[in-house]
Image (tube, rainbow, N blue to C red; front, side):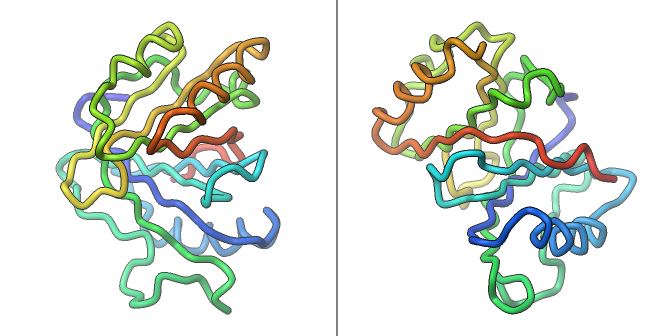
Length: 182
């Protein structure tokens, strides 16, 4: 990822399955899609956070206005089965891993609260090449930081346990369910 990009995270709270969800997600993803935008959809593999799905929308800084639901006043998809939570725009602080398929099985996403300012704790958990760190760009972002970890399979459970024990952190295992969408 380039320094001139912004990542917008959108969380989805729902009980519907992937096949039904992705049709609804693609409808909105296509509406916000442009030559300055790409999106990746990730699905939670274990029910650990409130977000069953998370999408990341990469935009260039010159297009920092973003709305996933574009023009809709509701925060829900049709029939109210999916609540859309705009987590906000985040700047890329560190990009050690760029969504490679071989690492998609062991992707932990940690949503780190605003009160946790000891970011060195997270940086010391894995080598930097196995992490991506995003810092809230706006004051109204849902979290202070969002961090992706790509641990080796043997380290995944221990890392998940360490992150869960940290106050103010929501963490779960996700897998990339839809390749970059443009």
